[in-house]
Image (cartoon, rainbow, N blue to C red; front, side, top):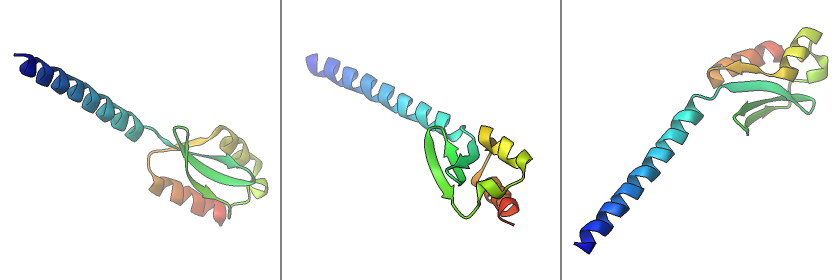
Length: 91
């Protein structure tokens, strides 16, 4: 009887742990990629993580409109969209 209770408890905790891990994956996968100013270049953030840095794009050389938008951050749904935007900024 005690063994069955222990197995039940372990199973329930395992399910809760799996559910939390899965929820965290879903939340992270729904986060946008945010392209923004980083030092004198650009970087992509996803949540609090910096995904990639683009040093080859000189922030101070960009037009004022783009600099203002990048100060706030521009959201993208995928890295492919980010790369396309970077190509526009990089000339």
